[in-house]
Amino acid sequence: MKRTLIVLIALGIMSLLFTNAAWGENLVQTVTEGCKVELEKYCRNVTPGEGRVLACLYAYGDKLSPKCEYALYDAAAQLERAVAALSYVANECDEDLDKYCSAVAPGEGRLLDCLNKKEKQLTKRCKQALKDVGLK
Image 1: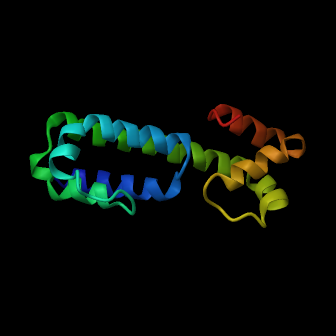
Image 2 (image 1 turned 30 degrees about the horizontal axis):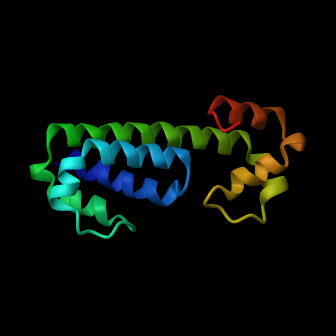
Image 3 (image 1 turned 90 degrees about the vertical axis):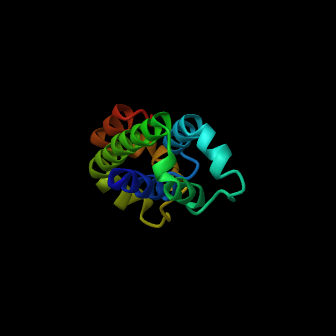
């Protein structure tokens, strides 16, 4: 149960970090498919957003099927990889972000859009990092 709480917290954080990102959509799909029965049985009347659905799953944590628990763990592993990839890109593109995107508010893909608009001016390190993680 403790691990499930950690997973749910991580997924809640993910929902804030990856709004409208492909990674976020994959994580949501993993949980939606894996926990379909639980979502329909326990959480169908919950309004999505702000972590309410995950909170609902947590409330019924002792009743989750192995399939749903696996989906949550799988989504947490995906999240871990996505965070590592974003950390790598942020590190490799640090100079470029400071130079070209310092006035851009983070979130909703705005920093990535900024980097894409400045593609020709980016350092080789940044271009390679974007390519390495599949963002280019």
